[in-house]
Image (cartoon, rainbow, N blue to C red):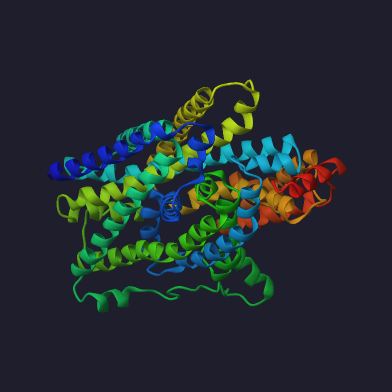
Length: 529
């Protein structure tokens, strides 16, 4: 199989992204310029960046995986909660962050509670985001493995699969780190804009191309769709309220998880996660930021639905055209189709779309990690008269540091997935965030919604309780069996953040804010800060 045209398309894509990213370096005159683009980015560019940050390679391949395996849109239900959450975020969190003029979100927690809460929250974000980003990265390498298999004409053994995964992880991370560390947030946003355009072009070609190759077209596709096509109310086979509740909390894709669980998930990823919120804070004012945030949720539904539709089309296609060489793992079916069935050049475009989603979410993460780490731990210890060039240098080297850490996690994930091909993509990625982001969301809700509850030292206890509660009910490594539970109750990943949030809020509310911190916050509000 000849990949010459596809390689040329990929080289052009990489050259364009690097060129745009590096061209932004001369505009970084200060830390705020590097981290927030001087808060002068157009709302439509912010919108594209938010979309690029959340449509990762895990979505590009994971959503078709759910469509192929389930033949319905049950995963798309989550869009309900994402829109509700963005509306809440736009009216609850964004005005507070603009009023306090934060660069790192966790600066607000320092003002509201004190340094311990700020640092613990920042460390929680840093560790979680590195792990989540590292586990996502290997996904973009799946298509490289399949291309190698088709080129050699033989199955790829686990060891070789690992080296291909690892090589792609290192290459994508290093390339992204170059333009992100040099160009700052402007490089992230403008390259995100190009990457979203490549993503849409890939979608616009793939759907009609697949549909045109299915005998009977729409009629055939309609016959393979399974009920419930969209809404799953999680009705159990056994009678009784407890059976229903248990089924709701232990099933991944239900209408209840979409309305409640997904709302809490998105409130955390778009309200208190430096990764996404930093994009929002680059807008010219809070109104444009809120508009871009809410609109991104509305755009998210057709985008995710289109990815799921590709999975349904793939199922219908392979029903009509059986292929003995088709991968056993459902997550590899879409990359297999791209490599084997798409015409030369178009393979390169769609592969660029996969890499674009990986690089878009990675550049966002690198910039956010560097900003939070620098603002919360390094920059406060520099001399007050330190030049801006030195402060920007700290941000750039922090970007490099986190690129190395993400590579380490990505390589470890590549080894695991090469030897455990049965593991699912989306629960793996979202599950990591679920362990800790509920505790972060809970402490931010206490900070924003109350004036007299929560204390600097006991907030850490509240967050730890939230994390431990999620760990226990998620049952990793059989924790529940270790304490004598005969019938494990394993909470599905969409509910983890909800549980962590409620437990953290409940514990934090037991303790009152010291009077000096109440007075300090009142003075901030009175000054209009």
